[in-house]
Image (spheres, one colour):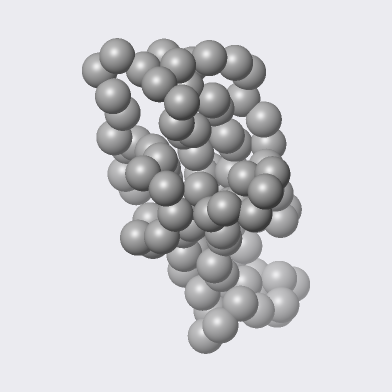
Length: 100
């Protein structure tokens, strides 16, 4: 975490970056790094191919107690990442450095 912003980077099994987001108290921004993958946040829907469909089950690839990222393999060979909020801390004293 840097200045109240949490950076979440998702890599594949060999270490290549699939996608990344920045989280500032529940406001997510998709970062321009990684493969040409699809990333959805609570603020922005994923851009998807008109021909791609899920090719398998979604898997949780990141969870820090406040944010979860799931990855879904697609039929066109890409992976769709979906970022969701588990909870937003409304009491900064109880949540340490997390704040709404």
